[in-house]
Image (cartoon, rainbow, N blue to C red; front, side, top):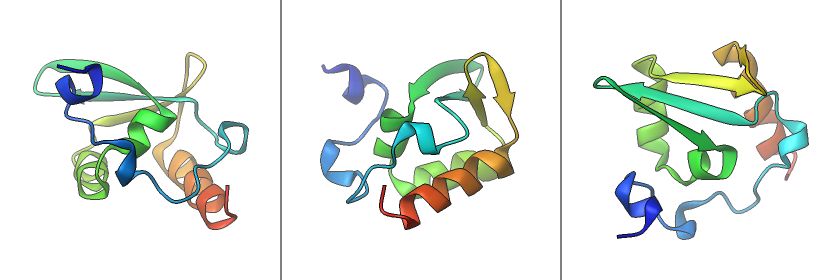
Length: 89
């Protein structure tokens, strides 16, 4: 079983058409905390999660966005992601 499949990540076919440049984002990693487990995802792995899963995790407050080792407020992280995606990368 691949590492992506083990964590329930989709294939690259579910990625947005244009991936944002990580330097345009306010975060460089995402911690997912749920059901007593914690896993750290890269930006690309986070974006490989189906959109409905990302939304569910966000509303359930299971996501912690990080820049280096510093926590980034969720609204700041998501706003930077929306800007980067709408700008076309």
